[in-house]
Image (tube, rainbow, N blue to C red; front, side, top):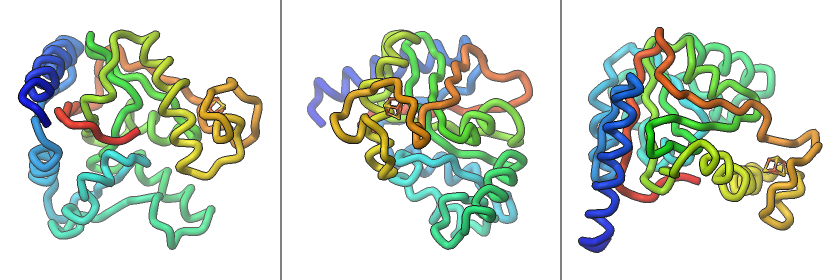
Length: 213
Ligand code: SF4
């Protein structure tokens, strides 16, 4: 990354952190993904029940492997060995985990988290249930405001995630959101966290690198 890009990411990231703090989130900026991964790993202790929202960003940080090495109990509906019934059961367990780790579809410059979710498990866990939540996001997901956040979901995150999940939705043909009526539609529960939910301690980590969709 060039000096100029580093400067821009840090200036933007610090502005978002400042505004997230005003909205009662515990916000932190890290220049690199590896610094963010170390911080998250340090929050995990042996026997802790650690759960994950479906997230390319979290996958990139190798948190599952780090949590496993630290002796945490992993609650992960992304485990490919689970059948459908087991997956749903694990999703319910994730809602009462000690630590829930996920990303967000967008974070606004004024410090709000905006998401669209298919099952609702990810956004539900971000709001209430887990004893603590860590949200980690790349600088590429910073947008100007709520309107831009929903545009990001419509123009980028929605179609890209549907393609990644191999869904039969119109956006996987032409990369354009059609606000579809497909039974495979993945954009169903839309949430905005304008302030940190009162009973959910939450770290929001902004990383000065491009991460996730
Ligand atoms: S076309 Fe449907 S599934 Fe695809 S992004 Fe739009 S609402 Fe979501």
